[in-house]
Length: 158
Image 1 (cartoon, helix red, strand yellow):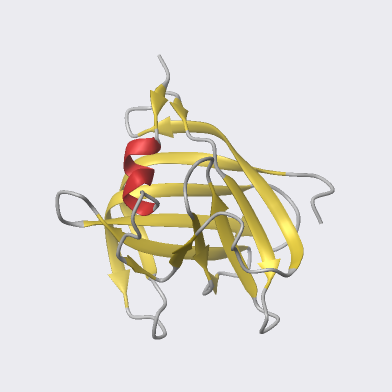
Image 2 (cartoon, helix red, strand yellow; image 1 turned 60 degrees about the vertical axis):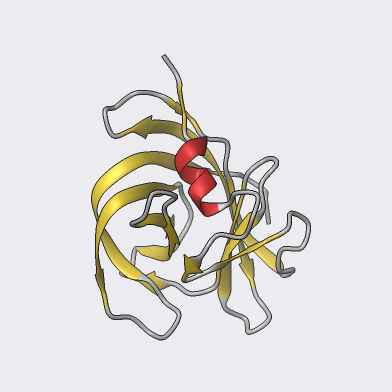
């Protein structure tokens, strides 16, 4: 049985602009322009119980105006999410944004891309531990995942 990941993602990119920390929504087609560094497609998505989940997402990493990487998450028929700040542990570039859930509380959207070549991963978490970061930056660790996906690198996307 395939489940649909749009419910939690709707929290992030619904019809109206949701309240976000660490990023912003922009209308599809109005994303920041820049040199494409890498692109990925969500595959193998699973929910917290391990069930297959349909979550068509495309993640593009571009070199922004300030020559810094900017992550753009795109879904068909939704506004795009732009995350301009990142942290790194040396092996992965981490982009995170927090949205307000419809019923209160917050949801963490965690994107992890390799520093070199290869696949990335993403998770949407309903529980997480956040620590201090730079102004406008989210730095958090997932405690309870709602769903997760592998981000398969698109070859030749640059």
